[in-house]
Length: 552
Ligand SMILES: NC(=O)C1=CN([C@@H]2O[C@H](COP(=O)(O)OP(=O)(O)OC[C@H]3O[C@@H](n4cnc5c(N)ncnc54)[C@H](OP(=O)(O)O)[C@@H]3O)[C@@H](O)[C@H]2O)C=CC1
Ligand SMILES: CC(=O)C(=O)O
Ligand SMILES: [Mg+2]
Image (cartoon, rainbow, N blue to C red; front, side, top):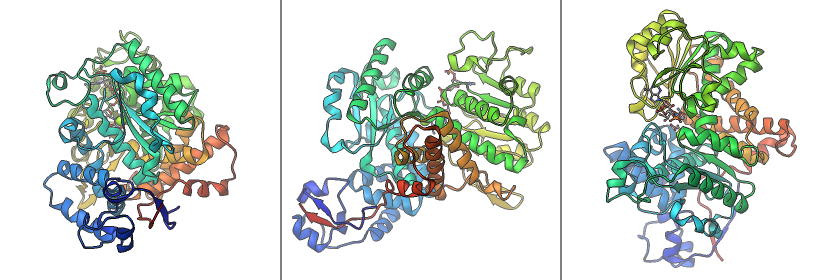
């Protein structure tokens, strides 16, 4: 950590106040105000970071909606990053849902209306020849993690065009708030290849490239150009892909994962947090993964990613592949995926059932026929786990595990409070977005959150700490096991499945250690001793504290 050192600063006056990395607002000392020509630009009062956090939180509390709080917090982030992260550090549980899901969904939808300040990079198809020039900005020399989207599948909200940029900004805020990766080492990127959202195309307010999405061949060439440009600029980068449509997400991951350090959070992060949650639920129900029957609603990036990781973990438990595969039922809009389904993609084909004798296989029919013990929702459509379906499942299962993972809140497949009511409190539930606690048998119970935010900050920190060249399936399995190892249910079967949001930093460190150790064991990074690992991690952990500035 470097926060005790004096930092040499070249900027002066307004330029210093306008730099969110350096700005301290009222916390510039009298000596700094002299040295950097700040007199007259700031009010007289000199403040501390702690007091600035108090004042900012008081104002945030006075705002009427989480969306208004989001806009305010983003304004703080764009003017004073230290203050922004100090606020998150003070109460992550309170502010995570404001800067991330569910509020981020509204922020993406209204991105054109609320956009004020530049953050990250917009790389657009019409400016594709400028890509190298844009990435060459010297201010970006120390970037270590990029989160990139093309905005085509934003949460469960579909194509949001450049509005999708809200997602990389929010995810990277969590890389810093949860794992401590320094803000200047992170870079959000929006690939603007058009939008097929008719409302945005018709809107005079839309700030992205007003054009239908480019054709697949052009799209692939653009992605290739982007990946090459990024690799040339930062050979060691972790390139995190987020909220791409299913038709692009898995193919891009597969195309580049042997070549570079790429990671798809919707596929790999979601899989790890879901498997971690189910391993934690197994503490409560005394089961193994291989004991379960899984029904998944939605066979896209998240659903197939989860199924693939579960399969790997079951094989690691010693279950033969064929037997493990027989435990999966993936239901899509048109019904159960079977070998007769007309348009299976490469990822779905493996899980298509050859033995299904029923009808179309809608969710109710499948649940009734196969008596699942785990029901996972990743279809992006709210309310799909109906009372009848849940009661049917619960009639055949002592502790039904139900994970409505779709975001934002309005798209969750079921409300936790209903799931408790329909199962007489026997359900082990965990949701994609945060929900308020539930009153059950006179006690308030925290609702667990199965969101990849428990995984990606730690995976990123682990990759940076060990210098991994790739993110392997083994590393994702290790992350899932690491998360399960800190489950409160491990020591108390009645406890929550995952640690509270307030403990996200501790969770990120555990996941980082597990990921880095596995990378080392697989030889995808340099060798290190176990007792060096914490030091390597600490080297990347930044804290929101003001440094003293010295004139350069
Ligand atoms: N909790 C978490 O950490 C995460 C949650 N998610 C959430 O999961 C959801 C899905 O994400 P992702 O997998 O990336 O998206 P995808 O678009 O890749 O997959 C969604 C799949 O669900 C299918 N689908 C749509 N409607 C229905 C329906 N009524 N019944 C059954 N299947 C349906 C889609 O089919 P079609 O393409 O034909 O429409 C598609 O195959 C989103 O809401 C997202 O927010 C995602 C990642 C992480
Ligand atoms: C959480 C997340 O990655 C999603 O909903 O897409
Ligand atoms: Mg996502």
